[in-house]
Image 1 (cartoon, rainbow, N blue to C red):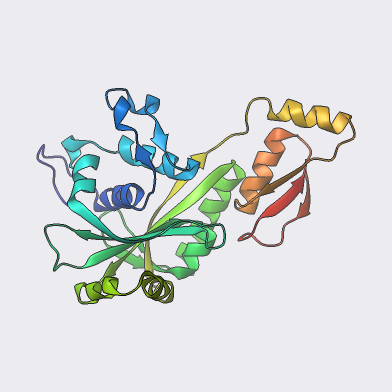
Image 2: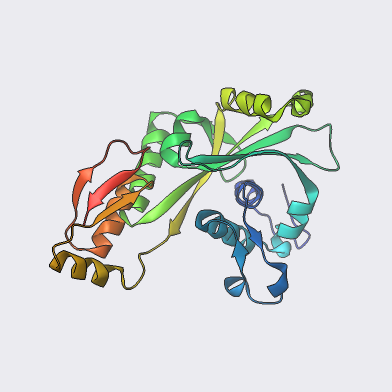
Length: 256
């Protein structure tokens, strides 16, 4: 995780951020348009995974030691728990192909309000880790709220080493492995946040206006962080009253 061949030094945190974004991801680039610029290439997968993968690909700069193709070819994916609306996170276990006796990594990405309570440390730019004390926690929560108020979907990227001695657990039935992953989803290290802009479609606001003039009540149901949902609703219609906000971890409903 150090110096590239060109002499440029890439902060270790950036390499870990790239690793999680690239490998804890179910989206795939379409190889048929590999010759096109990244922004024009087709990505197969859900919108969030596609956006995170596009970010990972944009970081792929061999001159600073970050090469997406080399990275994906260097690791085996041992286990995977896909994102679902209940957990609000995705988990992937990876191991370096040429170093099977070295510790594996548990990579997790998902909603910050769900994952932050599972994190014990935060990664610094130089690769060192600092405990998440009350000051760090407040700073991270403020950052999430700030980005969410701007209408961004905020994704937390986390990691945790898995001792090589536990590699045998993957010979167990998948449901037992999944249960063990749930039980050990603690003491994560927060590597960073990503903010994804997914604005309403251009005609959404006019559509809502027409429906309201016709006497139709319009509701928006979202699984996003509540502040993100409020921001998007306000972009669709200047007035938006909260009808139901049971929990930041659950779907919220707004009348627009």
